[in-house]
Length: 195
Picture 1 (cartoon, rainbow, N blue to C red):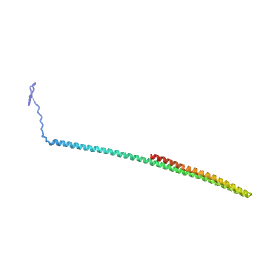
Picture 2 (spheres, one colour; picture 1 turned 60 degrees about the vertical axis):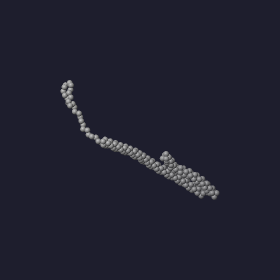
Picture 3 (cartoon, rainbow, N blue to C red; picture 1 turned 60 degrees about the horizontal axis):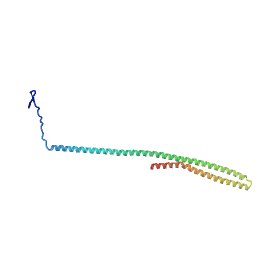
């Protein structure tokens, strides 16, 4: 087809119409395309759901195992601290027992020295009394010397017995003091552990 232009009077060819070959579409093609779209959407949703579930399960597992790990770590630290405290506590108990034994040894040693001094003094008194009895001029004087010796010995024995009882009581208190202090510490620790 040709057209004439008014101004120039020349003819130009009209552009040719584009024609495309039309392919006949069947009715099954849109249904198949629609079915493929539904299937791919369902598969994508399923994959997304599985992915989200896996991520949630992984996060939950990390949370649980992290919590268990923290608890185990905390329990281990606490156990280590308790073991250390128990070691120190037992060491201090042993030191208290050693201190108590040392006090007992020193106290009994001192009492043994005092008792030996008392025995020596009594022996010297007895020796002096025998000399006086031997030098007595009459039986009355001899009985008087013996009577004074017996009275002095009785008073000395009562006094020494009193002194010895006081020393034993003091020693028992001194020996028990380090151990009773440890019992007080143990009671405090038990209260803290119970709280």
